[in-house]
Length: 368
Image (cartoon, one colour):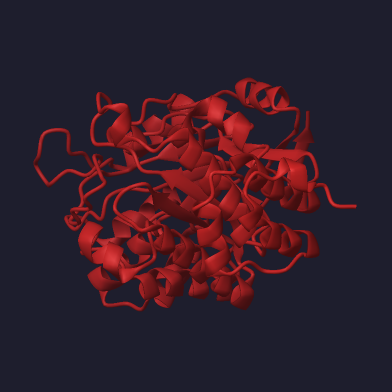
């Protein structure tokens, strides 16, 4: 029997989509636009919740991890970024090995499972700097998975060295790389990228890096940075391109919709995404990306309370402890920069869900 009954569906235009979701049929771009153009948020959320329950039951996953940003020097000038600095600019930094290890030692705990490494496209150092960052961490923390360097960074390394993206990835894997983060995707259309991040990897380049990574045996992550100049259709094209690559490789573990942050923490509410858009995008992501195991609610971008709500709108992951997030906060995020394990457990239980501590690859460490 259907979990949806007509009297509770405010927007009857959603009824054909409800039938497709209940039958497990793939949604089209036109279906996605109908969802985005509907104000029947509760029906959209209920559909996404049902899809997530089929895939993950009541489980919600988190990881004990640490964010590491070894450098903020960057040759690119993305319009949404408040983190980057030019060489020699006030606040610019590039950690050496001693500084890197000192930074990690301050926040490391024996139960930590992952180092998440993202930084600037620093053209003042060689590729060896990036390899040595991975080698150093793997040498001192051999049991911690290294999640490092976005698809855009891999393209940058290839351009820097004259190597192919595959050669770059093989060198990083030899150094100890375990997975790629999902950043650098932003919106995977060239119209958007030419306006917002023209100096970074193209749509095809970003997708191909992950295609190659999957071929080499890496499971990876995918993001979408929404809420700036992109059209709703572009958000859906982005999801469909990821879905098509997942059909081809089955290498993505999770999709993370990221609400764009204004350049300043003092920016008005009008400069931020709405809670309505955040929940709708979370739910539509779950409905469109039928071949992704998980959709992640990222508390850094949407806050802890909306993260709890997202667990009834299709999300099955609340990310991790982080220790210190810098990039979104440099761009004006108002949220906490980290949570403890106990806080994450409380957050998940407060939403009526089962907290599951995981490793990078969604192997269960402990149920709470």
